[in-house]
Length: 488
Image (cartoon, rainbow, N blue to C red; front, side):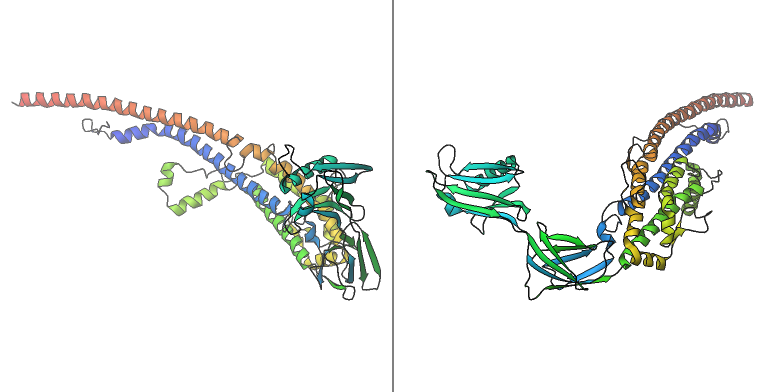
């Protein structure tokens, strides 16, 4: 129970509060130190988040990433029959017009065993060449217990098991349209073949077929009248950087017309987007590295926070955050590595219109783009531009790959790895096993202990003054009694 100081005439609450100020300052100092750790951890995590978003967008082969080969198509093609042939231009494709005559598609070797044929058969016999060896696969159509014929599903399962075990690439499946079991090779062309037969109980052939695939036969003529005859076991090929994929035979009297038109706009936009995102990431990290720290701004104590408006608190906390990561060694190493990925190729980048900003002191590592020069470089030699960005390194331990390959290595080492310095230091959102989280947990325990000690000290003081009040009350009572007696 708190005492009011009526007997002594003292402001007990003020005295106790003032007496506890030195200890409260010690508690507040530990709490402020912990708040700084929490603030720095969040600042680090924001950088990790931005870095991971950049890596996800540009350093994985998806959608807008320059790692995706389809994003380097500098020539767009249109076909008079998209259902028969599709055309895609690679980085080195040359715009041009083509006439395509598809006389034959490469096909697999196939055969169908009709339900009616299987009913009168006892065995299915398949002979297929695997490598240089003929493999024989025999499957009985009767159940082992003599209770009747195996179902189509049972036969398909047994055939696939035996075919796979033999090393063959033949696949069996049941076809509702064909009303039977279809056998087909994965390999296309004349090299794909097998023999399949059905025999009855006395060994008489019920069905027999030599299944052989077909080679593709396609004639492609360019705008100069030059023709290329494609034959073989593939329904696609690449000529002069143009990838052709054939899907349907055509009428010789009506060959397919293909028109190619150079268009580097989309590719240029993707490169510009990459550079802009690169600049944004680098600027964000560099801003924290070079931000000045004003040490008079420390995290607010509860009493200080109560004395301020919401806007004042927001402004103050913004000042506290400034400069917390100034000249941080982990961030300096990350920025140095990111810029280092571009350094060996800067000469080639400048030739295509990408170069460091002139104001290097304030915009360290930031790039500027001359889009007209970039477009000219793409139109002149898109393959050379592609190599600058995503050419594969010559070996596992070499660092002579394109920019994106180098950045992949850097981000895997500095951002994505569990052993990365920043990950070990602050972890990702929700992580509790990092250095900062452990320090903050330790500080919280210390603060809790100090708070309990503060309350105990405060209670001890109130108890002390309570006793003083009791004694003074007794003295005042005795004094009043004596005064009354003498007065009487």
